[in-house]
Image 1 (cartoon, helix red, strand yellow):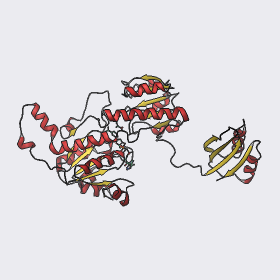
Image 2: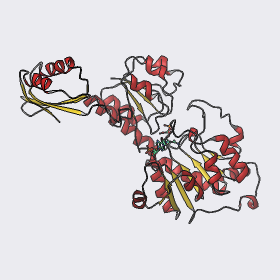
Image 3: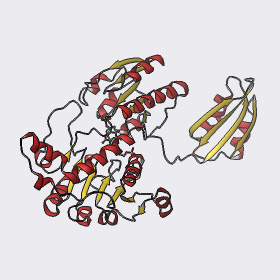
Image 4: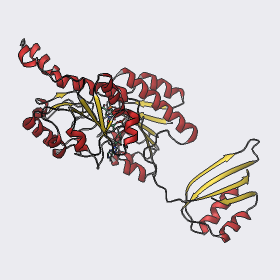
Length: 395
Ligand SMILES: NC(=O)C1=CN([C@@H]2O[C@H](COP(=O)(O)OP(=O)(O)OC[C@H]3O[C@@H](n4cnc5c(N)ncnc54)[C@H](O)[C@@H]3O)[C@@H](O)[C@H]2O)C=CC1
Ligand SMILES: O=C(O)C(=O)COP(=O)(O)O
C-alpha cells in the first residue's frame, strides 16, 4: 500500500500507518500545483486543505482512495474522482470541538475587540474609552446556520454561556430543534433577523456559494456579529464589507474567499483584514483535533485494507438505479458466480452492487446482486439451472 501524505499529519498517524504495512511518503510541503507530478505511485493520497484537482486525479494512475484528513471535501474534485471510481473519504466530526471553540473565541473577540485592543497596546496606546464598551453575550441570541457537527458543538457552548440559541439548517424540523434545545428558524433571513450573533457552519458547494449575502446582511440587526469558520466562499465578501460599513456588523472570520494555501505567505485582502477580527484557517489546528483526525485516518486506511471499502466515503451514489435484489445461495465452488453473471450479461441486465458472504464450514455462500432491471422468468430459470446453485430469489 503506497501512501502519499501531502499535508501535516501527526507523528502517531505515520507510526500507525506503517504498522498497517503501508509504505509512506510524507511530503507536507507539497502544494496543489506540485501534486500532479507527485501522485503517480500513490494508491492512497492523504490531504488536509491542499486542493486535489482533476489533473492530480487523472495523473494518479494507481490512485484508489483519497482521504481528507478533516471535514470539508470542497477542495477535492469529487466529480473527477467519482468518474474514475476513486473513493473519497473524510473524518466527520473529529475536529468539531476545536472549530466550535474557535467560533466562540471569535465571537468574544469581536464583541470585546480583543485583537484591535492588543494591537494598540503593542503600539504603546492605552484607550479604555474606545474599548470599554461591548454588548456582552449572556441572554443574547446566538443563531447557528448549519446544524452539522460543528454547528451543534457551537450551540452547546453558546448555551453554556447563557445565550439563547436559535438555528436554521436545511433539514431541521421543529421537533429536532426542540430535542436540541434551540429555537427553530424556518429561513436563513428569519434566523439572521433575530441574531445578535450569526455563526456560519455550512459545507461549501455550488448551492451554498454566497448563500450568506446581501439579503442575509440586510436582515441582520445593526451592530450584530457575523462569524464564519466554515468556508470563505459561503459568505459574499463584498456584501459583508458593505454591511460592516453601512450597519456596523462586526465580523470574526477564520476562512476567506480565495484564501492562501497552507504553505503560502501572502494575504491579499488588506482592506478586509482592517475591518475584522481574523484568524488564519486554524479552526481544526489544536492538538486534540489533530490526534482525533490522525486516528480516524488510520481507521479509514485499516478498513480499506481489510475490506476494500473505506469508512466515511463521501462520493458513493446516493440513489442507485438498481431496484432489484437477486439473492443467490450457492455451493462455494469455482464458476458459479461467473455463470450467474454470464446469464445476466446475455439478458443485458447490469449489476450495480454485489456482495458475497460465506457460511461457516466454507461449503455454502450467499451472494446479493443489485440489478438495474428485472430478470424475467426465463432468465431466472436459466440462473436456477446453473450447476452448484442452491436457490435464486428475486427480492
Ligand atoms: N475552519 C476550519 O478549520 C474548519 C472548517 N470546516 C468547515 O465547516 C464545515 C462544516 O463542518 P461539519 O459541521 O463538521 O460538517 P457537517 O457535514 O457535520 O455539517 C455540514 C452542514 O452543512 C449543511 N449543508 C451541506 N450542504 C448544504 C446545502 N447544499 N445547502 C444547505 N446546507 C448544506 C448540512 O446540512 C450541515 O448542517 C465543513 O464543511 C468545512 O467546510 C470544518 C472543519 C474545520
Ligand atoms: O476539516 C476541515 O474542513 C478544515 O477546514 C480544516 O482545515 P485544515 O485541515 O486545518 O487545513
